[in-house]
Image (cartoon, rainbow, N blue to C red; front, side):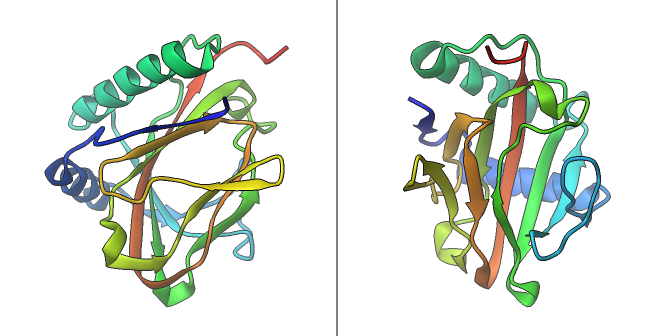
Length: 182
């Protein structure tokens, strides 16, 4: 009930365009909720896409995918998308990773997150390691690895990206928001 996959939400050509858009944006070291940086927890670069202009087509696709998945699978009270699209890069040069965490936090936006969507941008054959893993009460589910496929899960679920040991993994993440869970 707390995870869902969408095959080919984006085509391989579209995933390459999203990576290109992210490379034109200002990349920074990925932090945690609240802007803290702990490289033992998260080692990645992130870029925020301007979803109101050049990347508006990306946000439209995300919104449509989340709306369908929420209607068919989750049934959460989602009212908006308050955060920009985040493209993360995990590289073998620094064993890029993101240890176990939840996307709901004390931040002014993070506290209202309901669903997380992660779109695989890199071809699964272009890197080793870097698996998106979601902890379902002790059972680990691995996210989609084909370029363009999306994995959705409740933002309160523990998840991680295992260390990348070869190549570079790119992913697109977005969160939907609504009233606090009850």
